[in-house]
Length: 434
Ligand code: AMP
Ligand code: GLY
Image (cartoon, helix red, strand yellow):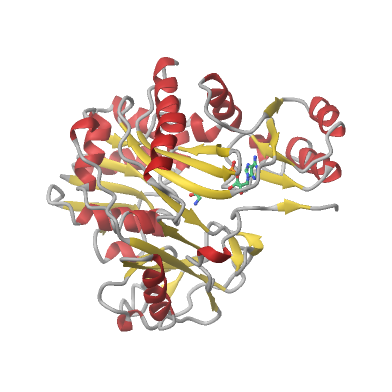
């Protein structure tokens, strides 16, 4: 098989790396990729959201299977376009991707199929939303309906903050048209977990779970980021919980989508809150998580290409998905200033000093054409360094021993990734009075 991975982050590097080790895979292409993917695959100069150019690349390079990393091309309908032209592609159609691209759609789907989730209301006018929020004390969560690069959920401490958030979304349009519609929902407390399964539209594979760290600084302080690290599996992820999430969340969503005429294929990613009253679905995503992918793919024992093919073609029930039993910790090394402005083109040092079994997935790196021996930063989240081990403690120790050997000017990483005893719910962005 010749496979093409679409994207340029550490998640896509991890997917390309895993696929390159599959017996059925002859060649891996990444569009557009980065310096890390260039070392294991062929990078193509097509941008991840440029569907016509990606289609041309699939034709030119005779691609048998395309794998999409991020939600944006999926929500734009890349799977529909490739499918119409007879190309096999992994991921949901545009209609299927609504599970992520419209939070109102996802909430209503959960409601119709009795998936445990917070109480919610959808508003299409600022006036109606204002009237509702005026009668509510808070805390409460205000969410832009559409895609907002993971920033569209505003957790508000009180009434005033909630009304401000509504104003920002609907009147100021800080998320553009994504905020034309807003979901307001009950605030939940608990531990967050990202759960992943493959589905061919009918069958749901074994599930796996990981926790990510969204905030910039140790102890979940500082601004929200694209993710500063992750680990898998969480200690509270038991066989019983897996069975419950399959029964109460994954199967009803997949069956619901099929019944409603939009069969869903690809990865189903459920963002859950484990509350004292049980599990609740916070959101669905239509792809693998970043940085969770960097810790769930390394321990995986199954042939990823075979699993992805069965997901696209049906018959996933005949393929065993074995996520392995190693613990895995991934630490993101970022540039100073990220998630705000940061410097680029800083030389990265120390990668050759890492232990042999340590994985490094590149997020924002390049090698200059004139001096290919140099590795430079080109993004905010530069590298994810990953270690596996029989226990979480061991994996964490190994990863930090190695992270310390990597450097570039002003590099920054969290020191508490995988320290479960300090884990507090992640991703929380609480907006106070302004
Ligand atoms: P979402 O994009 O819907 O996953 O929301 C992003 C983040 O906001 C989640 O990872 C949670 O940390 C937080 N969040 C979303 N919905 C809720 C909720 N109902 N209660 C508490 N926190 C939430
Ligand atoms: N780790 C969160 C996400 O991928 O959306």
